[in-house]
Length: 272
Image 1 (cartoon, rainbow, N blue to C red):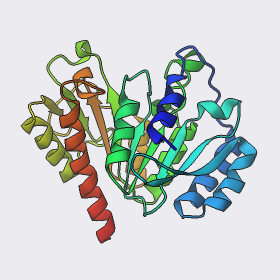
Image 2: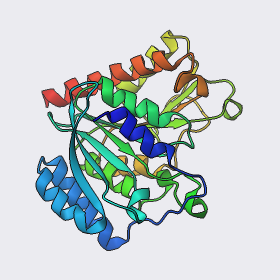
Image 3: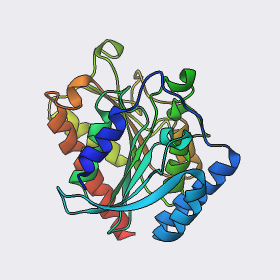
């Protein structure tokens, strides 16, 4: 399976004015149990739990890298198609996750998250399935706790898996900066956040550090960041200007710096 083509074909179909219906309470309960079983390495039971709510677990082998992944995705048409997807490394314990809450809307963040998954072993990609303006503006999963996206992130947080959430901003939103890095709702950030900021700055990017300066777009109301505090999990919120995404002139530097962060998280996870 061409993983890149599979993921980007899915996100290319996301429409700004598309429908969005979040899972109800019973569906959320089943989703949390199913994802929990998958994270505990029981893909068969996870698939059985998730099937009644329109989701399935599929084992994929990426033709480009040879790596195997477990994919959680909609099994057909219906509301579950807008709940997003999870791609989980199937050959090792998950040590980190990259989160993409605003695919298409925050242009090329889905491609960046996918690149990190492809380039770095031991990870997971949590991908929202609707434009943030879909459903009359109800689909902004970074600000609602009843989304499938949020529930998946929380299950990772419960297991101590650190995560970085990827966002994009227009140049007019933060003209002084190329990147804004923060701990989201937290007023502090782990040491690896400073290392990431240093790496980005060494490559010529202007970085605002939310734990030591007043920055725009810090993500202080982000619900995944708030949940991370509750579960004592590491969470980083990264906003990038267009040049740092896709085929922008700073994109390779951003990928290299983020890969360094993910390597650190993977090594720390393996040592625990």
